[in-house]
Image (cartoon, rainbow, N blue to C red; front, side, top):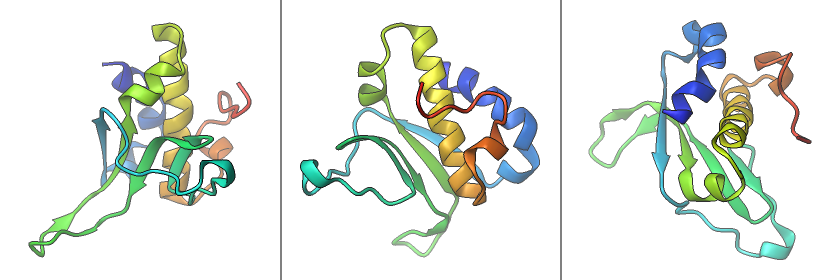
Length: 121
């Protein structure tokens, strides 16, 4: 429910361009930094240092030759550990979703959420 709450303002504004995008939640990431001291994540990963918080998986084809949709995968436990209260978690989820939608649409995050995006918060 918190993911839907955090995503609602983005979806309200960008719904037409997000119809091919799914959002999923995994408990923990299945990707790890090779060297935590010099982490250099690709643009499709939003992380807090060596800990991935989410990943954008592009549309493609699965191993059975079925088309797959693009999806943002949020990693529940790392996100929860960085938020003290549910309001903080909604704010963090919103920031991560803004970053991921910006990557998906190939625009700057402030285009997605000009009034609310602040990666320093």
